Length: 228
Length: 400
Image 1 (cartoon, rainbow over the protein chains, first blue to last red):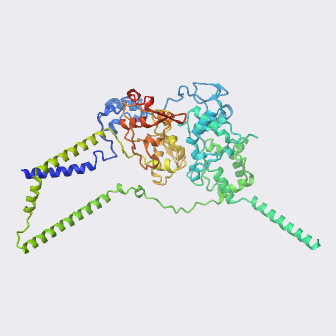
Image 2 (image 1 turned 45 degrees about the vertical axis):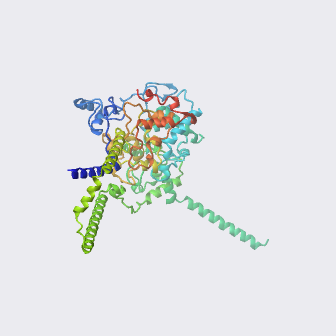
Image 3 (image 1 turned 180 degrees about the horizontal axis):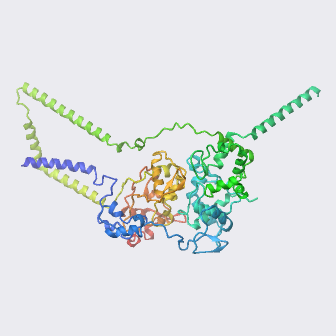
């Protein structure tokens, strides 16, 4: 009998020593063990979450919306089971209507110009800096510079010469220098371009609020050649 | 001054003038090189030589308008003008391309436009001797290959066999020596008896038990502390997006895609249209070729050949990595805008990560440590106060 115990002890020591070297959480492609996951995962939908996310990805014991309600939710309120949905067409975020038409503030009206050649021309004629927005204010320009170095500098470059990192490495082509393209370009057209994109430039409306778009424009105006 | 030298000077002048003239006329002649430069500076925003971009492809366009070069030059110089004048061919083109207008290039001289036309006419596709990178081999992580583990296992097996062989040889030798000296043969039973002598020793048993218990306790405590923490969590994502390439090599600001870090609680996962800001043009990656970028196109419903959105978009199911527990409130904007923290403070060297993993454990101890040590910045200048001095350790600061 003692012989068996001795052998068992030896095995136990070996197992313990080996397990001390490793840890329980060894497969890093899976989530670790969670104690009381319903304290970790939100009952209301978080931004960028899925209605059945916790069930499918986080261990299967918790879901914001259960069972049969899921199907209805996915079809009616949360298409594809996502919490991130497109706002209803024409929605304007509260306090965020920062386009103005002929100095007249229209706080609850969505951007009126369509994404067409005519819309571009119209915006060029009618759209201007909003009333009460001081484009020469240094804090506005500073904010514009920060935004420029985040969102524009990759292509348009630190000096507006279209010598950004993506351009000099040859990965992206076709961005003109500001001093060429901005000759006689009204700010309304710049705003329109930031909103919808133009040519190979995509829309930046997702990243820049209307106010931020005007701030960027107030900054890049320093590279605009003087009108003759 | 003699008459001879005067005529010499006149002669030199004539030659100089001729030279000057010849350089002038050479300049006026349309050149391929000048055209290439102009093309790259002015046309590539909307045109490619092969394949559609915003505008149609340009290979063969000059040949198509053979005999109408004059009209082509006019069109390049001022397309909107031609359309406005009601030029038949111009209006037809305008209608054909969904009223997408080509912009005017009145800043180019007629000679420059001729150069561009020359370039387009004479352009030929480059011989593509590109090395096709194998998608499998390009992943580059040798540890991901299971073969290496089998090889290691085989090696260990061979070593064990050698050890066994040596033991047998030694035992045979010892037995031979003992037999020669007239002693008893050395048997396996002898070894076991001696071992039992040692293992049966009470001191040995007591020591071993203590060691095992302490080790077990240490192990349990260490493992229990990681429950609920996902440090190192590295799931496979639906698209093999490389942060090392985008944030590292290409130096794209984190906030370009994760815009929410300055605006909201959530950092935001970019919607696919943000990918399209660059990938409308960049259709091939250096590592996985067209395969991974095609997944973006599939999700956003983009047809790269048509250069248009054709299908309904489908969501990309990214796998969430970081999750601060619901019972603790965390806000990105607070830390990035007011706290002025770098993304790397919490997320680690993301710009070097081929696959992103959770760098910090995101546990409460980790939060508190930073709140205790981090000096508060006011208007960009560091003060002597820590976050804890401002109530950063109050329970209700995060748990509410």
